[in-house]
Structures are given as C-alpha cells and as structure tokens.
Length: 226
Ligand SMILES: [Fe+2]
Image (tube, rainbow, N blue to C red; front, side, top):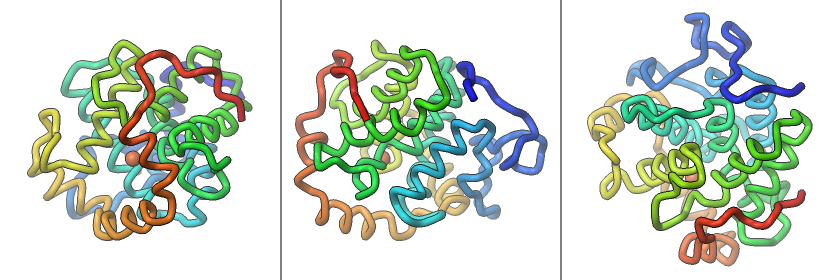
C-alpha cells in the first residue's frame, strides 16, 4: 500500500475522462467538477474518505472548499514553477480542516487535530516518516502568518491556496480573479461557503481561534501521535 512521492496511477478511478486526473487547467465554468475526479492513488482515496467520514457528507461545503483550495495550490505551483508532491499536496488539502469535525477531534486546537487525523489516515500507506511529517506540517501550518517555504513547498502551497480560497479580495498571489469567479467558483460552487464557515466558527471557535491567531512557529511541531 506504500506510495512514493508524486506517485500517480494514470487512468485509475476518478479520472476526468481524459485518461488522467483533473487538473486546474481542466477547470471551466460550464462543467461541474467533483473531488473524486482528483483521485489517482489509494492514499488520496483514503484521505477523501476520511474527510467524508469527518464531515458526514459527500460533496459538502468543506469538501468543495478543499477541492478549490487544491486546484488553486496546483495552479500556484504550476505557474510559479514550484516543484511539489501532488499526492502529498492533495492528501493535505483534503484533511487540513478535518480536525474541526467530531470524528477527527480530540478537543485540542483544530489544526493539531487535523494533523493527527492525517497521520491516522495515512500511516497505513507506510510513507517515509519525513514525507508524512511534511503532510502533517501542511495541515498544522496552514494559518501561519508568514511564509513556510523553509518547511517544504507543499506547506507553503497549502497556506497560500487557503488564503486565496478564503479571502480572494485580499490575497491572490497572482491567481487571476476572473479565473476564480468565472471558472473555479462555477465548476466547484462556492455558494454556501460563508454560511457554512460561520456555522463551523460558531460551533468550534474555542478550538479554531488559537490556531488562527496564535499559529505554530515555523519549527517542526512535536511528533504528532494519533
Ligand atoms: Fe481551509
């Protein structure tokens, strides 16, 4: 069940119908897109299943948020010439907010619970510890105030893409507003994003705010156990 960095299985389940997985370049406003179209590997499928278990819904507001956030991250990497491990980036994208939800929560700050849940989900795939830690760091550091390139490209890509997804009026890192508005937000609808975010914030603010306003330092976090 192990998989190597960047491993893909072209033509596996969940392709976009073109013999490969969906990429940001395939996004067009008149074609609705779904998370399943991004899946190439067993680890990615497990991460998506774990997100759906946590949120108890399929194609819900959080799932669509993670799909848009991943596609933005992929575009940032592609247009910026940033090397990245696609499988790791997709798993981190699916799971970075999962700690908000009951099945993934231990009651700790949610970004730490997201990282714990990612470890539980991905450990069966026997990734090298350093690679797994990079994925957990991408979850735990996604509210960092400053850049995290030093921790790994995927860590910074998740941080930047989440900012573009949540506050595109303020932070876009070169992503064209027209692409967001005319293509991405139609292909993976953003409607309901703010009401859903408000509901989550109301329910979980005690575990959210410390991670948002006192995010962890750029040092690798202490080993996160399930
Ligand atoms: Fe997010």
